[in-house]
Image (cartoon, rainbow, N blue to C red):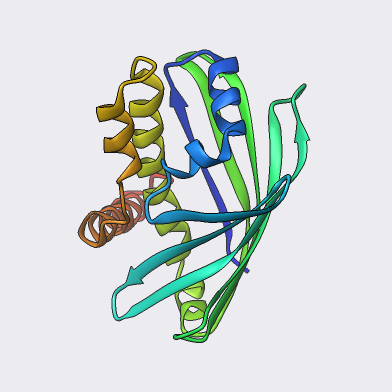
Length: 192
């Protein structure tokens, strides 16, 4: 079961970032390739995401439930499941986020476990899932920065961030670059 960890800093006040994370329909527009399709209960949402990793593509439909929301510690946990009916892939995730004041405004930490079955499970064994999570976090953070930096009602900035999709080329280059950096670090004796 792949474990993922990623973090980033954003030059915005803690409470502004926390409030934005509580607005799920807006937050979803920052995640590349993710589309919100409905709401089943107060903290449960339906959605879909399309992913292509090399020769394998998947179109997941599923549900995510936000649990353990703690406004005092600015943290929450998300439980999600999804099915790719065409490709026979299944995924489940238990992911948490923590938002804290940082030197550069606000620090966001994401971590959790992902369980995969089907052809995508092979990718999880090779470490690609962590690389994908890292690159998606970079794209998510970039989109979040655009949304939060825009003046209220700036439709152009909101649209630019909201129309982001998973870029196969950018994703592949990001993964390749992170693997090259790790290889070089191991050759030259530095942690990667």
